[in-house]
Length: 411
Image (cartoon, rainbow, N blue to C red; front, side, top):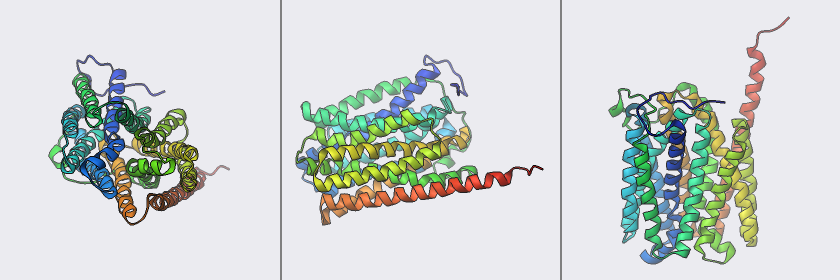
């Protein structure tokens, strides 16, 4: 078993184990805050009077902002350390929660999503690298499970607050504000895990830098990341609308439950099967995505809410397998001074896959129906997942075929 280790030790009140838990909790909270507006979209739509396509734009601008932030700040913590980047991002996130809480129109809501995306993008590379710094074996597992747990809890927690408490568009963000401030105080007490190195200003130039030894593996893992995060993008933007169509209910809890089941199933799958070979995990994840999405599409046509959630749970298991399997094939190949940059590139792929299809889905809804859009989007996800299964299986066969040739002949 790999033991916890910290490259740089300083006087600190937090042990490595507690620091690992704190970083994981920050990842959960960041992703929870990103999915918290999902159950509120109907409330915002009624209050500000915007269309279904605007909902996907509000969702999509967040993903675009995360992408821009990853391109600019993704490798910064490899130069200045993890702690400064995390502290700045958490303080910014706390401020963004206040902007959300007092948003008085669509323009402020869009501004809040952009600022939220910038802060999240700056933080996730540093968190991901910090987790691997602290525990190279468990770091990729915590990255995947934390991201999906946050997505799940944010969606359902927000939905419960919307349904059960007054002022839902404020109390959700006040809870998150308190969490970010507490976590910022915790970050101030952890030891730095990455040595400073020159080149911080140069690292801010938008670039996608992947070490040569990582590129081939990243190319193999990328289709799996694209397939599962395109699915997450669909659920994050139009999941509540599809749930309402199938169930005939506009319950915020039921709408938030769709994303909760998807991401929650993914998180449980990661925790239960994280010891499975990474490539096998990715292939199995893509196969589960294909199966789950097929069940969801059948459920949507037959208006079966039970089958819809069963399919969502199966697809969610594939989400977890594809995402965590992909990360586990990539991250361990990077040196400590390269980790934040490599993890940022992986998330760039994920957020491109999540944001662009979600915006496209919004345009399709305007010219069709939620059901037709779901069918088109689901079919595309199935094709992507099938390509992943084929590509990774072929790569595994080729790898096995080369191994005997690399061994000296015996006589």
